[in-house]
Length: 78
Image (tube, rainbow, N blue to C red):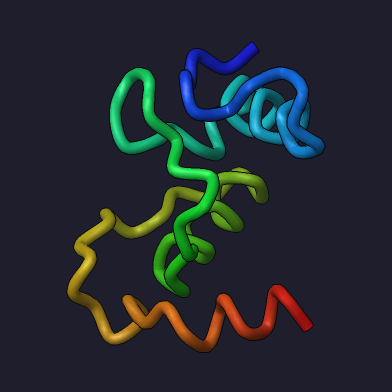
């Protein structure tokens, strides 16, 4: 299981978060905070995809041209 205190085992996504954590795809904000209600930026999503595909992602900067939040959040909910 993932160590995140804000992802309880009774949430519908807890197993997915735990699997992604165990695979090294997500790491959270710190050792105990995941931020399940936060938007995912395009940059963060690309990093997760690279890790899932076994590639070495570019370092996260948070200020790249792909740091937008609206487009990815909108696309995921559609």
